[in-house]
Length: 617
Image (tube, rainbow, N blue to C red; front, side, top):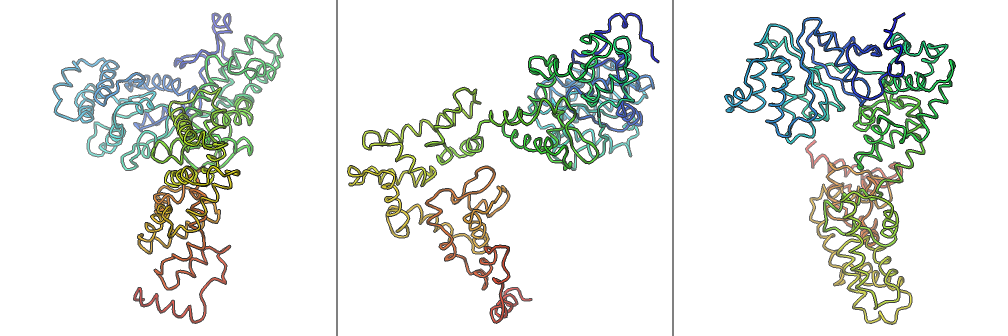
């Protein structure tokens, strides 16, 4: 059994570290894990390593311990924290060089050295410094630790070159022996794909990822049990219950051990009750220093990702675990700390997280989301397209929803623009009709805000000689739409916009038009078609305006298009790019691609002959 010094025994309430920050290499509560052994051994061998994990999982403490052990083994180490590094590429490299000069006590005027080599690119100057100054300093091996590496993402330059340098130093070892003495260790809250996109220049496929897992009982008992021994009757049992709640998460484990020491009133404390009272109840007010809020903030920081993150997280909540697929969404969840890898699966990291970030919490976050993110994004990309703005009942609902919410600037602008557009259109009808809102809702019901169609219908409404006699304004709008736009669209003067779409379709190369129409008919038939930005057929339809994106799916842009450019019309313009085009289209459109639609008899013979002539088979 390890014996604690008397000064620590007399201050057990300060034995466990719960105030944040990293542990010193000799801290009595430092728990060694498999990661400690892996990190030390790989770096001692000169291998490039990286530790990417959530905050407060022990990355910096692991670094401190490893630096001490490497130094004891005769290896020189530098500890560089990128937090607060300057914003430009030059400032970044100069700051790192300054840190290296300080860490290794190099006798050099770095300002003069930098100026002397000003003809070279910044990254090459850094390489020269490592080779001509740092490696020339001594014959020892050198490990450069760079902590908070994710801070580089906020700097004002493309950081790919920096990571490519690390790979180049490794590759040069075959020809330049000096580089065998140099290696790097990166730590932070990031994924390799966050830091460098170029898979041919990335160092991460030649380095070692160090996995930080929670403490096991066997790892934790020799260190953490010491603070419990003078406070509880069965310290091993108590520690096992603590780990049941924390699953060895470093910060929470230390915090719960500290709670036992401070709050336990007898030798057999009720750990479940302590967790309920001092961690779970009103958790946001008791989360000091911040840990749970850090996780929540990481999950909710990017509104465009929240729905995807919470959808995957909900799956794990309901199923207990899901298969790991390496997707960006799963990687982001892991970096929050909320989920962890267990062999080939992902599961919630511990019971405390599961209790706090439960289904009710998920539902609350989804309810707090700006519900029109997609519309806002689409409108910002194409502000001339008013169909993305809110109108009618949807606008009324959004205004009501936003009353007690603090909107992001771009969401507020979108909502304000929607309200202004609605007010202007309302004023055009106000005083001329009994209920302008009924008319507006009817116009938008037909056009979904498509500008050309909407303006045409407004014009018809305001210039109609019958407008003062109308009693049923909704049915009157329908009558105008059908008589002026739908029933005679091929010839009526008011339907020029629809003929323009038709003419654009007919100008598309026949083979492209064929497959585009196949896709369009699927959407017409309410088949679910997910958005694919690289699909040319989808891009054609979006450019024509026939379809729009809603909830990551494609739908027909409005009711007028749906009635004019219907399945019967599509059938009439299928191009004869092949002698069997009509049959092929029918086969694609049939349920389960019905074999009765296939060619047979003379038709099949003619088609085979056509293919033979066409392709010289």
